[in-house]
Structures are given as structure tokens and as C-alpha cells.
Length: 136
Figure 1 (cartoon, helix red, strand yellow):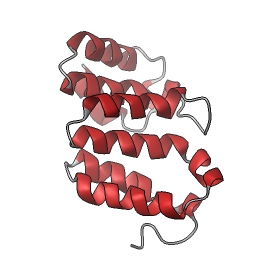
Figure 2 (cartoon, one colour):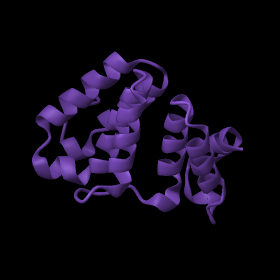
Figure 3 (cartoon, helix red, strand yellow):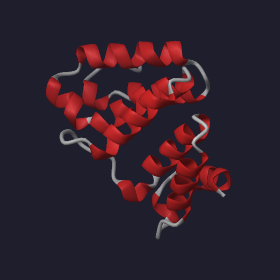
């Protein structure tokens, strides 16, 4: 559990959980998120809100719960509390596009993929070199 050790704000557990979930390994992803959330204070959960919601969304997507994934991805960027994901990065568009695509909602997926590609600064999102070909 070295990924979870130390201060909750310094932990990379949520990012590692996202990676596990994207690889289809929902169980270890969920375990990391649960351990992190159990030891994080309410304030720490608000500071890492967007990361926590992204991890929950990726887990839901890995488990085939697309409606839950969409809700979590939206909460990462549109909630009324917590540190929200900045939409300009494109992460929200890409996550929602993947969830809508998996749910068979092609029009919604296309709209989000288009929003991702149409961003003004594709270099602002660190995963653009890998994500752009998927979106196109």
C-alpha cells in the first residue's frame, strides 16, 4: 500500500486507480479508492474532488455501469463543491465521450469527441498525443 501511504493530498492512489480501471482491473482500482477515501479528511476529499470522481467514473466504466460513469465524470467538472476539473484540459470531454460511446449513445459521444478536438489549445492536455487519434 505504498501508493496510499503518507498524507492523502500527496498520495497518487487516485491516479493509479484510474490506470487500473482503464486496464479493466476494477477490483484493485476500487480498493485503492476506498483506502484513500477512508483515510482522507472531508477537506482533502474536496481538494482532490475531481480526481476522486474521475477514479469513480473509470471504475464504473470498467464495470460496465455507463450511467454511473457519466454521473461521476460530470461531477468531476460540474459539481457545486470541491475542486473541479478544468474543462479546457479536455479530460472531461474525452471521459464523457468514452462513456457515451460504451453506452451506445453515438450522438452524445460524437458531440464530446468533437468538443475535445475543437479545443483551442490541444497542447494543454497532457494526454492529447494518445487521445486525439481516438477522438478523430
